[in-house]
Image 1: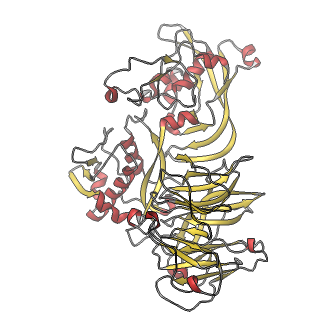
Image 2: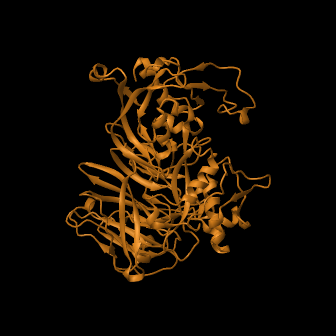
Image 3: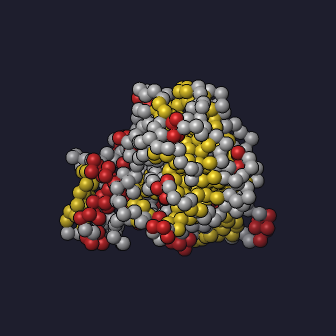
Length: 621
């Protein structure tokens, strides 16, 4: 960014650094404008400006083309209602046509602007062109869905002309401008927040345990376009339906066309913590069962918003209340066991036997061999995966050639392996197995001659090969299934690097004729050149171990859409080879290390050694 833009002369938007007690400058929240602190013009995307409110100001009379461009770019980072002030930098025609809600381009830093070219200066005196450039790292579409991108060059043109103003004077204005917003990362993080909206997994006959998180980004305060607060924006995106990526595998119980009643811009619980949601007449078509499921979708969607402590949701149609649902009742629709679910952990001891640590979140359990041949058999194991109901477990032999499945509730004779790899090297054989929320078992055979992703329905029967278009020559090294069963995290190796991808699990047909494939792979952490380990950590978050190009290993949280979690980078730990997290995010994060054995990280604590001997520690799933 050049010095002219940093200088910030007349006609520039300004940012107010505010008192921490008020958070941001809002009259309703602080009662009055702060009387201390400086008013200063600053460069867009200045790091560390989280406590900053940007106010858009119109261009000054006689503003130069450079001032118009800078003012427009800065004004885009404000909460300008309907971008009315921002549009004053555009010609009348361009102001009417510009669609800021069509999506957001996220750059590593605020956009540079270059120009005008020598040709422009020599061509005509009443028009000129500037080019916006930068390194694009992500995009947010019109559905508010975030998609990370491998860093790439961004370039867009702003064309300016002279237009007669209201006073009859000629003023420079932008007449060609791309739709949407262009923001640097720090401005994007200041203006937007990630929330999960919830839908039901398609094709499920059991409505319980079927909610699926669909992450989107909404404005932190009031959305300039809709004038809705954060909670209302979130409900609006829920009613509009799932994102295009998730749409093929989820359903909404809201009847088609359901929307908030016209004019609703604020939703907040009353003094009884009841949130009343006024809907249009389309919602009247829903029966009581569907209505309660609709209310569950709203409750789970708003649960991530700490400002909206909702104890009960009441959905209202045009003719009055439709149904209500309490937060406790909504747990019947949860997509995982949550805090009341099993907190046991499993690992493989030094002799190759599977052991269980019961109640480990409270530190009260001692390791015990599991029931059955996996805990006391003669075949040594190297890795284990436990079904979410803890009725079965699958383990890979020490040479990684065979996969065994056994009951964890009753003694049984050792059974024949359910999958056998024919690869010559151990590193080319079977991956660590993973169970989805439907009770199906998944494993990858890494045989270079015939790499396969396999699924065993209910953990038994003939393994079914799962199609994974989009690998483009890459090989699946490891996998983790989500609790909802509609997403899969894959570590894929290609061209000397192993990267993280998220795929959509599509099912067609039923019973033995059901066909399953993993579609539309998306790279989830493109900033990491090599990913060592991954685990799901809640409904829409993963914990990832990896390193950037030329960097050191780090452990960090990543959202399912690929955006960086607000939790950020976790405390460092050395030489991590595997990581395990629970569906309940309050349970400890576990990791296998080469030097310190198995370690754990409890919320608000540092890493602690749990076991010096053992490997492949996992939670059920």
